[in-house]
Image 1 (cartoon, chains in turn orange, brown):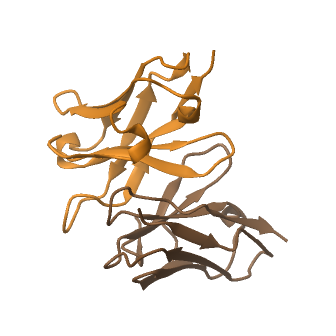
Image 2 (cartoon, rainbow over the protein chains, first blue to last red):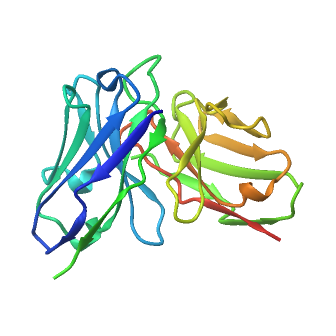
Length: 123
Length: 108
């Protein structure tokens, strides 16, 4: 069974840092692009970042560029999101997502979602 | 940045009725790089449709997607109890891979 299990969320002060992890199982991790999508309480979905299967290509929403870093360890089937300089606006449930195989290009729809990990930014 | 506008915001329908949800892009997606997701309260989203019209694995055939360019539609042919949820469209053709604001399908 394909599974994604996020961890690393919690309460952090404004300006602080967190590293989210996503442990993947049930599929050949290195073969798929992965990403992070967040959802603030009571709000809609917001794509945050994606990374290619090799890890060589990344993409970010403008509001997190220079503060968040997506990475992956294909030997451990694990995706990461390092979040620095956290702001109140970053508070959300963060979902780890697996992308469908790409027929053309790199990025595709997200066919598997984790349960999410909550990030709270407050003093 | 491509802005996706979903309409209506809320759709009130009865069991067995047909639901038609719209997603309009601020500029052409240049193809069919559009997906639809369903989200029930307290749960992670679930992929329904990708490539504008391809059903994801395990999705019932009462769900169908259509459209290209800037105008896309998700149709649920006959609403079942589990279909009352929030639906989001997402474009993945151009970064940032934006989502629409969502359409809530509620029981009338």
